[in-house]
Length: 227
Image (tube, rainbow, N blue to C red):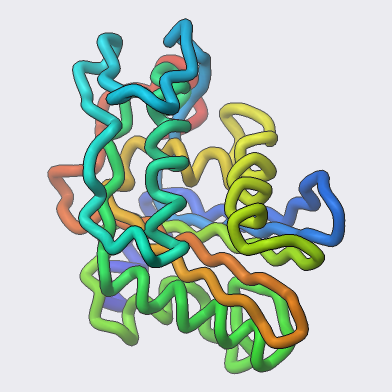
């Protein structure tokens, strides 16, 4: 696994972005290893209540992600897939994301850790980054990425929407939260949402693909700087 990671670092792009999104008392960060996507709202309507079948891509984005919708993290997956649906050019027809329990466990553990040890970073106080945590959980990722958010003074439901809106309200074709969400090489996601006793809400989105067959080698026409 370490050798695989070393090859990825050499062959792909390591992105580490710190971004302050708009909103009251909330912060976000994004980190990724892997190829990324491009943007344009080629679909005329925001079909948030429809089946989200993309004629442009021939992809059904209104899929059952395969998680328990009593889990707040699960409730974010349709938001991610809706963003992919609404941005077919920038995502370069990225596949719909499906839930992965192992990624979700790693994401939730990180959200809890940030609360309990009072930090906000991809790397924990022990120096472990998202890819270390995935390796420690024996997750056989090929490409991976992470978005993190914290907010307070709001409900958990409001935090989910604020986090996603903040992530997507970022420049196109730039390594950031938006590009993680629209990354054409990511196929699965796990999301950990944790509300601290002090009212802070931490959200960790961990993305991954698990097969080299999922890594696109064709040029990204909308975002030519992405692989």
